[in-house]
Amino acid sequence: MTDAQIAEILKNAHTIAMVGASDKPDRDSYQVMAYLIAHGYNVIPVNPTVEVIQGVRAYPSLAAIPEKVDVVDIFRRPDAVPPVVDEAIAIGAPVVWMQLDVVNEAAAETARAAGLQVVMDRCMKIEHKRLK
Image: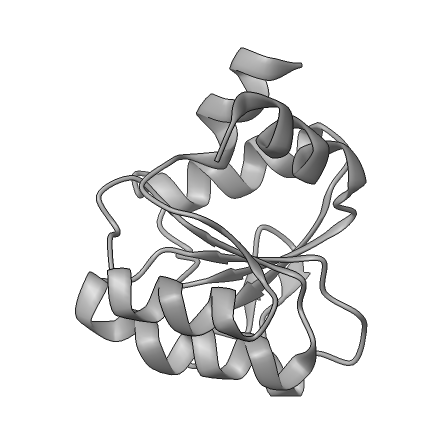
């Protein structure tokens, strides 16, 4: 993805489903979630083991989210990405974003083949700071 494409995604995204969001303040997903919320994004945590993260209701899956999702931001191990991509396709999310060190080429190809944009091995917080 080019910087222009990433900037466009960040500009047009309103609702971000964060898969693998953590309720632990020392985790990257917690810090990225806090940053994105502070910058006006509606961040919905997806984690089946917690009910609330940073005062926001968490959902057990993407399918359980009752609103339209613009970006599925994935904080999971690379081998756990394919089912998340399948869920993202099923809910009609236009973008799948794999965080730093999350690389799964097969899952990315599945997403692209279904018409989704794919950002891989990049952090939304870092890219937002860099491109804003």
